[in-house]
Length: 402
Image 1 (tube, rainbow, N blue to C red):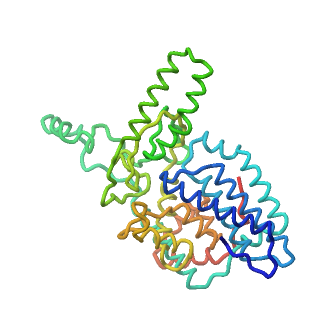
Image 2 (image 1 turned 90 degrees about the horizontal axis):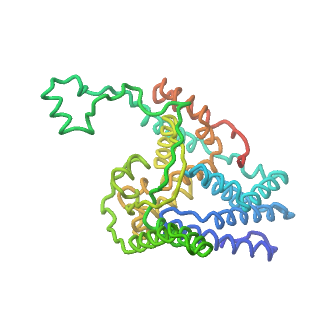
Image 3 (image 1 turned 30 degrees about the horizontal axis):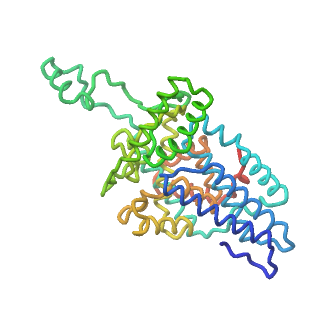
């Protein structure tokens, strides 16, 4: 439990702190047990309790700055993390329409109205930290802007002599297909696509949890209301068999995981998550947006920034997570050789943004694109000085909840 500073003890505040500690442990335990699964109700309650603690501490005769900053900042970061997940369109709507979300928004507005916004503003930072941060930003951008995926194929199969063409089509149907599109590749701005699917791939632990706690109970209730529905009986039987088959599955995680960028062909190629857990299909309809080249570049740069700063003394919370991922107690959630690739980079970036709110500019698509062009058009030192000047400027604004 977080200690409450000050001579006077507040029974209600102590009760909320105990509840916050319990909810935080529960959310973390479920996240590790079910491959990153989040209980929406528990997480929103945790955020609500943190805002309530911050408000209570803010209303004291002598405000408790450290407690207010930790609780309010933690609440904002957890909510941003939740809304920043790779959610489908219906899942995102379910989050914003949940009763707990409305209470969280109300508490956040109260916190800002009562003068709490100043506790979320820029913290003091020394010149050394600013230089380190600027260097990491520049190197992260330069790493992924060297190639714009505009390479031309070495040869075009359809232009080969007929005997060689047939041989290439037989031996290399995937690596050298006919009719390859010319560059640029990927999805440009304004060309984003909305995909839909009747099935969804989930880690095995999440699939079992979903079948046992959501799908099967829902089908049983439907069948109880219409016991003579033959199609419903067959579907329930099929899902029970799927559930039992998944429960009997045993798999050995890869001893040396393939460390590739998050989501980059991981599911299609390996059939395992990045942590080595088996991926399976469940009948869960989903709609999601494709994203664009800029989205992909932005995700790669932010993840690389977190990995470069982890364990470097910039963010205590990020350093603790890095040490845990490197330790033996992290199990298959960590790596003694490459702990940076096991980090929750989205959460890590939010921790960095909590210390350096000016980093929210990297989340703004327009400002990020402008920054990429600026770094691309300069040398390393010139780009670093320009970014350093940007990071030394005040924060853009107080965080806003959607």
